[in-house]
Length: 250
View 1 (cartoon, helix red, strand yellow):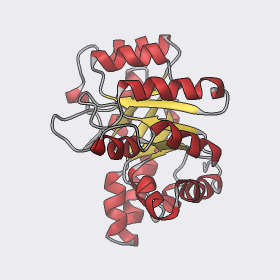
View 2 (cartoon, rainbow, N blue to C red):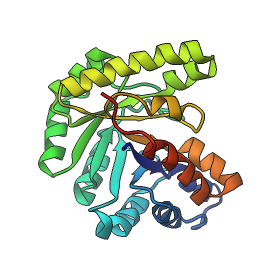
View 3 (cartoon, rainbow, N blue to C red):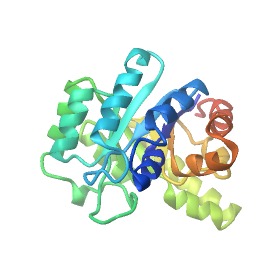
View 4 (cartoon, rainbow, N blue to C red):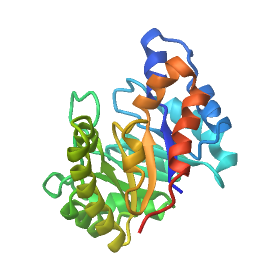
């Protein structure tokens, strides 16, 4: 069964647009948990434009007694303050994501040529602390091989190209899916788990959920956007129904 990890960044974005504590990020997390979500994701950026350091600490406290059934995933670039926070909190997983100054959201996965200095040591340090490490990569076999060479546990496949292809129709959607499937099979061959995320939604997820060896999807923007109209518990259950309806393909 595919694990759904709900990214609650957008709840923090709404809160920060007004100041104060409403809507509460922790209340959103608890609502997701009550609806049956097995994973929570946050991406605390350096400018704290949505998730803050305190949010991370508060969510970690909320999830601490649920570690046996709920995974906590912290995303971000390997800047010193983020690594210090991850090592303090020790979430289930840290997904290392490249960040371009001024970007609104992630635009691409890591490449071998853009590897930060001592990246392999960063991966090793996190793993030694008991944190599973996932690297955000484009759906290329060479990127998967690079992640394996660094000692990562998983890759997260950057799915925006698939989402855009899906919008253009079934032929392009299927062609893009096959590219992702090749990358997923390569990851499995190299002993890596397969995660995916970025612009997945209720329309394109059913096809993508049949990806070989897919372990986890991280979904935030589309899920929270729909929750404005139908409610967070309802939309969480809609996504869970898709994820739980798929066993791992071979």
